[in-house]
Image 1 (cartoon, rainbow, N blue to C red):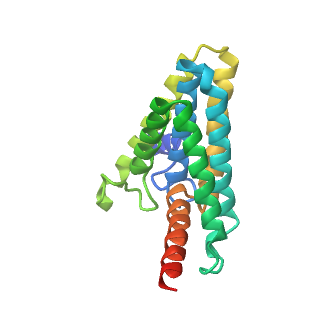
Image 2 (cartoon, rainbow, N blue to C red; image 1 turned 30 degrees about the vertical axis):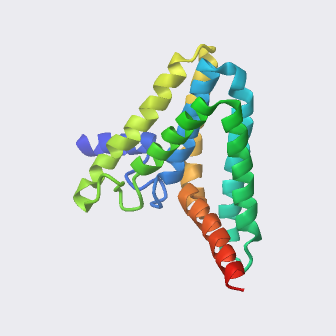
Length: 206
């Protein structure tokens, strides 16, 4: 019975190391963005559309950079790194000038989510021992529960709330799959900034 219960829980919230065994970082990041956007639409609807557009552009650039292996191209070719960093600096500037408070909140929520995300071993920044990996299910449950609770509290029609929850459950395995295809927010961002820094160092050495 206990084994069946864990199977059911994993089917809903995802396993300790993600549905594909590649970790949960991108799922946590995606869900945290969704949570943040729901809060904005609820508490600050006048900036909801703009922040949604910024989030979509941001997520699309992460997907393109990671999925199409732009990080695997010639290290001397830094144009994709410059493009990624440039686009995100523009997005950040727009968000800051629109609403500094919600920009900080967004950064805080998503950063915390990435730190809490269990990796391919089922551990996160706080759970560094293999024996703790089972607790990853608790983290998976908590972040999904936060999403569901906020969704239920939103002042929208019930069928839309239900659709959002079902949509999140359906897209979860897909996000875990694309994480295995190198679509990971931390890896993509680190690589892009690394390319820019290396390029600037080489220019300085000339």
